[in-house]
Image (cartoon, rainbow, N blue to C red; front, side, top):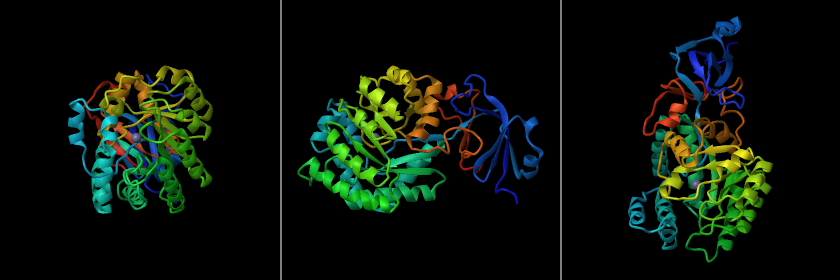
Length: 404
Ligand SMILES: [Zn+2]
């Protein structure tokens, strides 16, 4: 019996993004996709006759560059409302922290999100996800965190799940109920008690792929983070952390001790934190959009991360307050201009290392047996994706072997 939907891509110049793959010279090859996976990859002359006989569809890519589908491993894609007025306040000199302390910022988004129906949250999120897909995203992580109450957090997580069942994109959900302390709680500790009570049922209902905490002086302490992590890990749910963004809190050392998938932001990461992440295999997720939008000046310690061989991912951090971008391609350019990543490092950050940051081993590189999630680009070399900005050379986005 034939495997379903066997498709041959001819004349492909493939950057597999596997660790040993050459950056300067691509593999000139054909790709066979079957059953949503990469079935075979190599020079046309070596294609086995049995594979040739099974081919149902064929596409000539005309020598275009092929990379793995892009993976946006850190977004807050589901919310209601806009923070454009807050942007105007920040332009007049107010800081992110002062706006947060005066009840604006995240609390405005929480109020709007609590009032939104599941249908309107889904409609807005679908529009945003489509924008990411238009630039080649095939997998996206979506966090909750704008409900800060059980029902709305659950609605956000369920909406993220529905999104993944509605559009041709993989959605990984992250419970970020510990994003901020809602006004109705007297203390952060009391709110963390509530969050820990909610996590179990959400995990049991299959709504949560990972648990995250905003560990920051305007968020939660390392001790409070630890309590949430222990509750998640007790149910077998992996953890990740918003860490060392605005100040050093020691979050990365803590998260690494709990085997976190990733620590994200990291502008104030310490050398001890870098080594803890290296030992634990925790991915460093850098978010240049937030760095840019908040006009931060302290860069994450990229040289230290490189020397310690910590895998570096990048992501849009799409959110209404500090990174309202829907352009992963712009993040490639900003990772290079602001954080001095090379174009190869930046692309690895949106493919293979982003997959690791989500605990996904079936994608992020092009290899036999991996998912056939691909981008076909109208460029001679993928370094052009980082070089240009405000430009989208995506020719085709292939999701699970389906050609558009
Ligand atoms: Zn975030």
